[in-house]
Amino acid sequence: MRIPKRLEVALAGRKQVGEVLRELGIRADTVLVIRGDRLLTRDAWLEEDDHVEVRPVMSGGSESCAA
Amino acid sequence: MELRRHNAAYCNTCFVTYFRDQVGRAIRVHQMFTPEDRVLVAVSGGKDSLALWDVLIEAGYQADGLYIDLGIGDYSGESKRVTEHFAAARGARLHVVGLEEEYGYTIDLVAAKTSRKPCSGCGLTKRYLFNRKAAELGYDVVATGHNLDDEAATLLGNVLHWQTGYLARQAPVLEAEEAGLVRKVKPLYRLTEHETAAYAIIRGIDYIVEECPNAVGARSLLYKDALNVLEERSPGAKQSFLLGFLERAQPAFSAEDEHELHPCVECGQPTTTPRCAFCRLADEMTRPGPTRRRGRRRPRVGQQASRPVGQQ
Image 1: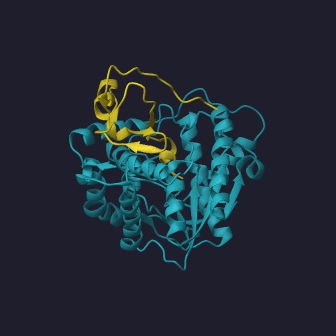
Image 2: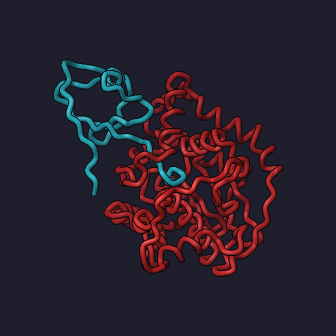
Image 3: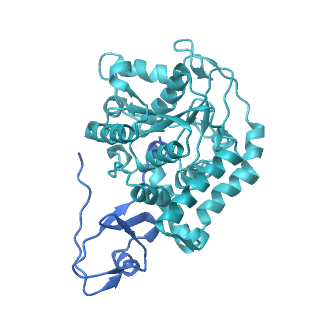
């Protein structure tokens, strides 16, 4: 099984999800930001010790493999 | 959940309602199927097909699943596991077809043995087996999880190369034909993949997050990237592109589309050629010896790659 790309980013202080995504160069519509089992919106605040998952939503290949 | 293209935001409960309403609207407007119809949902273990199956089960449709084990390394094993888990948790019926067990080849073999792109052999194989299994098992309709991003990316690719035959058949519903073509529907075509992923997470659906290893560098991802750049600057661009095409342009292409289907001389499935593309591929894969060509054959200008008519 391929291991998904993992990247740990340390936040310099409290920031909103949208700001963090912008700094990482990630378009907000291409990922979901998940804390625990909850989806976070762009205006949600992240604390320095938060752990969140940034999950890509794009799939593709044969007719986008939508079967 | 923020939906910029609708200039709206929803709580989880309202988002689930919105999502199901969009699916219900697609089914109703295009008369895709009724509660009396037997629906075969083509499931891959990904977010889209499992979200679709979940919506149809919750809405009370007679929706069973069809999973095709394509033999793509460990990826197929994991996607099969999550699909079987989904079906078992809901008491839903799942049909599993093993490509290697039933037809003697895998998509990994297609990649290793031919110059054909794996995604091409994979798409051909899936389209064929969806139709064949649905017909054999007596289903009225095949439902696939194609979402708005998939359809917009396909449309962009077809427009860039002016694939008029494909444009004629790109629609939320592909009607059944006498030659043995089962009705195909795409109830998620109004929803983005961002929305299907969010629905899956809110509903607690365990889906395969990892990308298929063969999809790396796929042209469809390039088109999706391009459309996402437009969408960021102009929310609603993808929806406008696709729905505008379906409403204003597709009927004109469809009116010009003439094709004649007849049964394949070998398997009896509908095709425009004497022997269907699937039988030719399966034969090539099971023939002894390496057959990998050194160069890639390029279609002549104006010539479209062969694809079984209607089996989009």
